[in-house]
Image (cartoon, rainbow, N blue to C red; front, side, top):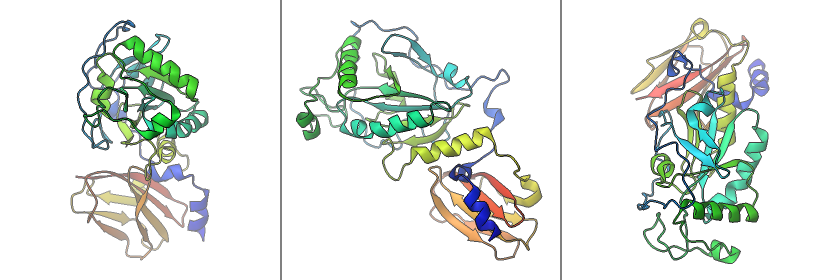
Length: 330
């Protein structure tokens, strides 16, 4: 009963709580990012958009993945104000980036989700839309199919736009989008050579939740498409970076080894007479394993179908101990 009461009092964010890794930030407190992409000069409206190559189709793996350190970049708002990733992360807030284009129906359909996230977490996150190449331009070849790929959702809505040939044309399409729909987060415009799209994608509507140390905490190949849940990831990350009071010292309650692990990992409990509940979650906050008291003093978890990557555990016992941590499967 005590365990159930403890569980009901926890925010779901606790399931993915891990210790903030200070070693990911250098001695001056600067995020450690990969080398700068592109340049920091504001394009002129007349600058031509570079040739757009055909993109792959595995949006979940293209670009950066969970745990990767991303590259620094500077993009510009519609009004010409520069936004630099390193500078934004120095504020101590995570950054959420969602890319898209007016001619992408999935982007339009999920913008209400992003608007809700923006209004809910405006004080806790830095959030931007990154406007990239058109997904379904008329006349021009789609970068995702290699053919002219118009879609009924655009035709019926009267959203008929060509692929921008200049930076100014891209701004014009953004203005049309803003007149058509509500986009609450500010918009960053990808550079003339589509450097963000090429390195963080390419994808028509992906999303990155970037921790303050410059690593990817959550990545969606399609923003907020089930089973992806950006709210769960945000809650988990904010709990991690803000800290939870009255959490027992891990070594006094539970020991986890080996970690990283290859075939199996052991959870060794100091008190083998306590009632406990142990849950394992993936990086999207989905529970994938659960163990309850058997009074043997340990749990041995076999890897089985788990792929390489980062997982999280949550331990709660009847003594009031709450332990969370990270697991790495090699």
